[in-house]
Length: 432
Ligand code: NAD
Image (cartoon, rainbow, N blue to C red; front, side, top):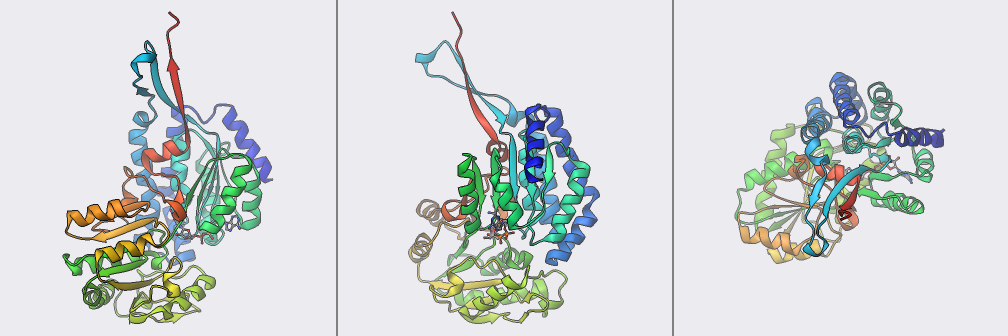
């Protein structure tokens, strides 16, 4: 069955069906139409799987993809136009250019935390670049997976886009097939399995992985704004966001000052009882609930700490006095627990970060251009944002992806086109 699906898509691709610009535009338009027309169904599915509230789900899942489609349609001609390349004088007379051609059949393997966004945003680039694709949504968000499987074939060209649902056995079988690109979002353990399988066919991969994204807080900033912005981004989707601030490195006495401000910001956002707040999400399953519950012991609870296993609820929690070797500092938290560590200087903050795996994103609040410059030149991460965590993710002009343990490959906007294209070098020398 799976080999048949892939071979059908391969035949479609070979027939040239996916190459015309008109087909690409039609598919992107259909993807947008599907998201807008089936919005209620997708929102209900996101609520069932992750208790996502409609406002957040609309913004971070559906509209994210719609905006990516709109931006891609607006720039598609420009991004696909052959790019003239200046040649050195010794090769003249001749002309050079770079032409983007589709790779073939791509495999997208999505995770559960933004199950719609992370299955379909890569598809925007796949289609815009003229490829066929298999989409494999996460089995840990089964209602969203079923909604994708139901709606995609009704809107997109079934000869070129297929949805395969399933868990490890199905993904393993998919990985045995020959694809022309594999785009995986998830954790590094499975990332290694994906890359090993891809090596057999020399298939290029993008691995969008996670990690511990730190926040540096300098001494010269308005800590009220800092606390609000950290809370807004950390506790979205109950902390289950790959680019969520993982922990805070607070310089000097800002750690102590942040404690009441983070508490206040949390109260303002979710009220006195976050369990009763319609805006606050739940942990995806009991395995993750149990893992996170153990991490709560990693420090002094400043606010939060309450749990309810039956409801998969963990209160938004701030921990202080956290030892650098506590379990909560050993793995990506991926949940609503925020350790705040006091460090004495920027040097210490930088040494802390560079002594660990390269993060997917690094955030800093500082009023100093010199500090910004030091952070940029002395640390390595997939992205850096100053003044507002997570925001880089929504700018299609910026490449999104990780480095080292946080992954490889880039997407969003034009970077998606490049990821799913062969950048073919063309040189044309006159015969006389
Ligand atoms: P997950 O468990 O849903 O796994 C992702 C996909 O891998 C699923 O489709 C699943 O079926 C497949 N899979 C799981 N085990 C497999 C195996 N043994 N063989 C083949 N396929 C397998 O998601 P997850 O890994 O729990 O997601 C959380 C991680 O993803 C976090 O580390 C997070 O930071 C990261 N993440 C990264 C990004 C990003 O854009 N960089 C976005 C979201 C999540």
